[in-house]
Amino acid sequence: MSLVVAKFGGTSVADYGAMNRCADIVLGNPDCRLVVVSASSGVTNLLVELTQESMNDDGRLQRLKQIAQIQYAILDKLGRPNDVAAALDKLLSRMAVLSEALASQRSKATMDELLSLGEQCSSALFAAVLREKGANSSAFDVRRVLRTDSHFGRAEPQVEQIASLSREHLLPLLSEQVIVTQGFIGSDEAGQTTTLGRGGSDYSAALLAEALKASAVEIWTDVAGIYTTDPRLAPNAHPIAEISFNEAAEMATFGAKVLHPATILPAVRQQIQVFVGSSKEPEKGGTWIRHQVEDAPVFRAVALRRDQTLLNLHSLQMLHAQGFLAETFATLARHKISVDLITTSEVNVSLTLDKTGSDSSGQGLLSEALLQELSQHCRVRVEDGLALVAIIGNRIATTAGICRRVFEVLEPHNVRMICQGASPHNLCVLVAESEAAQVVKALHENLFEGA
Image 1 (cartoon, rainbow, N blue to C red):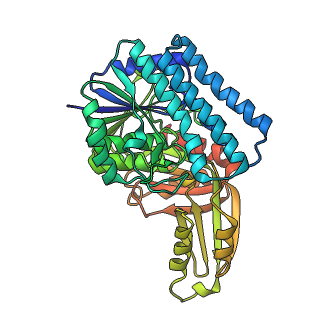
Image 2: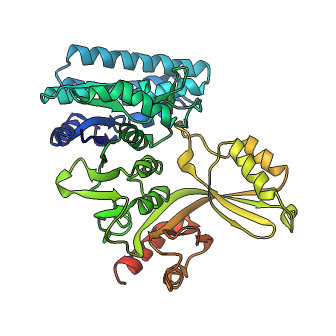
Image 3: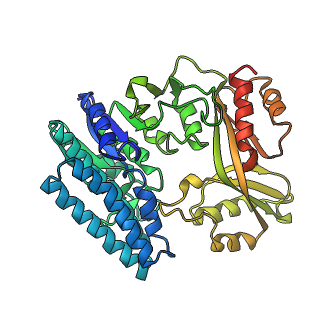
């Protein structure tokens, strides 16, 4: 059986009309047997607000009401079938219980269970939409197969267990039904609900595709594929028909919001092709991500990642000494911090932090405990208000003239960091966030528009 896994993001399942469009996409492809859905647009943000310590009773009730309105609006369009109404009532009731529990006792495990309920609601509703169109479809609790560790808020998938459990519990269902399941969530060995971090629904789809040896993963969102840059920043940006896994991984990591950075990893492991398209305009096609591509230009895209933090570490212990970097990275590892870019001098290390690893509740990376531990062996300075601009392509490290073209564009701007050479697929610069849009536009004009 040729299997396609389709993932629909929050805007794609925002309301009844959006779900109907997505159902048509699914039913238009007989190989599409597994559907992974996000929470309806806006629901996860409301749930995150419910996890905040500052939330009072009035605010909690208001947000619960807003979530219920979003879900019941879809249920009403379905004609309120009894089984779906009962399932939705149960989930919304659990939402109220968990949000109230958080008000009296903070618990990351409780937060994860609360945050998982948006996806559970949308999967029950989307399966009902498919049934309304005549499909044999049911919702499946992904926690039965998507095993993770117990790092609540940013759980690590257990790939071998996911594969074994998926083959046992999920695969047998796919020959007879279109199964709708949840992105973003899993469970640990004790059966406790976990989450994969914000944006984890793409990752879930790819993990399940890997486990089931699917032929393709389709990521349906609100844009028609991956563009040479954000069209809001450069009006002449255009969609890319095909890119390689390496290019896509760089783009996802450095800010292309169409893809979650982790998505590409399971696809690379199994060489599963990935499609990115718009659920609003599926007829426009999209971008295919493949192991090998026919065209591999030097410049493929310009990506932007805002809200960057630069961590500057200064210590005379670094001078002609060994072990400072090892100690620094060990400290960051203990606090589950992933280092992104790094530059060094004799007595300074500057590094940016990968905020794609932020946990589901949106809590910051730089805790007081981490900063105090780092301060024991160096002077620490934190800079915010920065943005990372990445030029993505091929042979960037070995093609003559690249730096001249890029730095001519950057001449009017203060560049805080430059990273180039570690990968043939990117050149990165860190600039003030206030200048980032202007930098992206100028680079796109120079590299892609012949300006």
